[in-house]
Image (cartoon, rainbow, N blue to C red; front, side, top):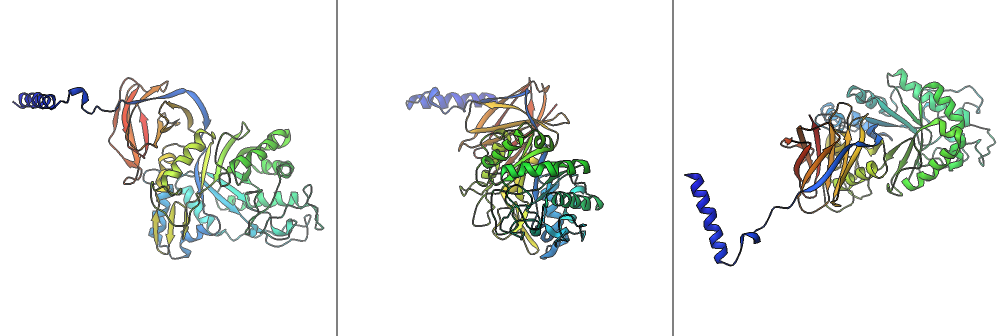
Length: 466
């Protein structure tokens, strides 16, 4: 009875439309699905992970120095590090300052007078917390050598390491002493049970800041690597360089390193920021590269997903996509995970309160599902409004990330070519104005094909498994 009534109703509707001069062909038709190919036989860069920093005392604030309760500390850690409910970040970038030897021991050849408080402005606590969540990649990076090792005699306002070409000082040549200083910092962490994996000697060497900063030309960076590299390698640490303040600017440092066979052999990871210039292509090296620091400019705290401000969640999602697909980056390290005031960090801390920006969930849609050891694989579509990337994890799952820049929902059929997944399921996780890496209904895979719809101005991550 119900089927006969439905048939009668549809026939009657068609008759009415025809009488009104409207044909069935004129009725709105569903949009044809965009086709996309995920090709497991096309491989790009390996993935080291995604991370954040809490330098300049932010780790201490997270540990309660401004009133954050133990419960809220745990909640923030979960948001940043938990692999089931948070971002599952897997790299912690630690900031090295002059704290372990703030005073001149009497010259570059004098016996060092190192001190260690076991706290390091809260970073030791945070590193131990991160390790408990499964983090094992710790990148320690110095903004400057201690002031007495530099041409300007102070930690701040630039200056250059004494002993490098063009940086002659009455106090002598501090290159080896600085290299030993950096390794000693990592050793202090080792005695706390934290294994530093990557060690950097410079941050934004082409930018003079009123706080901790040190200038190095590409040639001077290469020169120091020849001193630092053997000392770091002997102690078991990978060398990272050079954290320029722009991606394009970093290319000059990477080129100089690659042009020198000795320096090239000591640098494991090329690192660049994206403040002065965005990722527009790979760095000129075959070594791994990281986007090692960035957060967007802005004047207020912003929790929105897509408001056109340039520091909303959508902006961050697009920047991550570009770093992975244009820059072939193996690592993506956001600046602050949590900070205070008008921060563009992922989380704002405010006494015993905290607030979460959609920037966190933009990152989570990548970091929670693309795990260390993954490999980026082919992901192509003719739809220029759909920003796609795909990754094969070591457990055999495939992660497909789709950022829809269109103002319309986009039906998509994914061809899972050469992925060894002919049938199975895909679990979507959605971030948009009303969802935050929220699990959606599972979609079936049949014949190595997956058909789904990516909502307008939305970020969807598909975990694909047999």
